Image 1 (cartoon, rainbow, N blue to C red):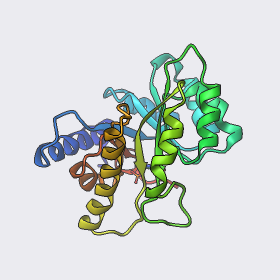
Image 2: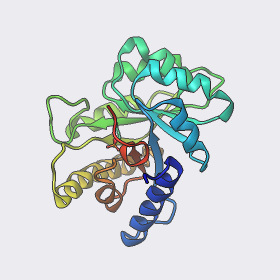
Image 3: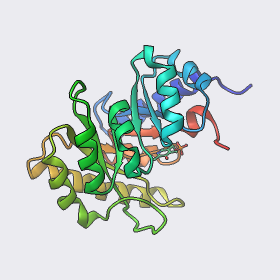
Image 4: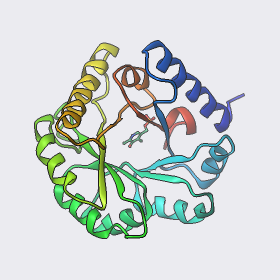
Length: 229
Ligand SMILES: *Cc1c(COP(=O)(O)O)cnc(C)c1O
């Protein structure tokens, strides 16, 4: 029999807690973001049964339908997909976090469009560590400049850095990549951007290496909801 969604969430939480222990991370320091993209409302309702509160979505239209249908639950929605500038208003109005900032134009629009009635939108800069042409994100060397631009904006808060490493790496290579992102985050903190605490790194296949290197948010889809079509 295949495990239910609540059972799979409990299993992932158990893994996170185990990795926190073996890599000497404080218990509870890694947040689980359940990536529900392409999965139906019914799957999210099942995840709610075991207290899951934070969900990640990549496609705006799909996300808005879910957010509206589940408005009563006061969930935390994270936008983790590529952002076109004509989508920023709906993102600013409906999400608590955005993990995929890769240019100042998008940050400026989100800042202007964030409703004054909501707390600042938490944003992370997406970093393309492997210079993959096909993937969004800025290069490591571009982080300080974009961070400074985002840090000036008052309706969004620079909360950290995010990455999606190239597939097919060994465990040691995964750790080496994640280590680079952690160093970059440390430099921003040392440079006085005290809100920039988070490292959004680690998915179903590389969460152990990410937690070993200091991840504070793992983005897990497949291990919770099963394979996507
Ligand atoms: C789909 C997606 C995930 C989830 O990946 P899994 O391998 O299914 O856990 C995480 N992060 C981003 C940005 C994604 O697009």
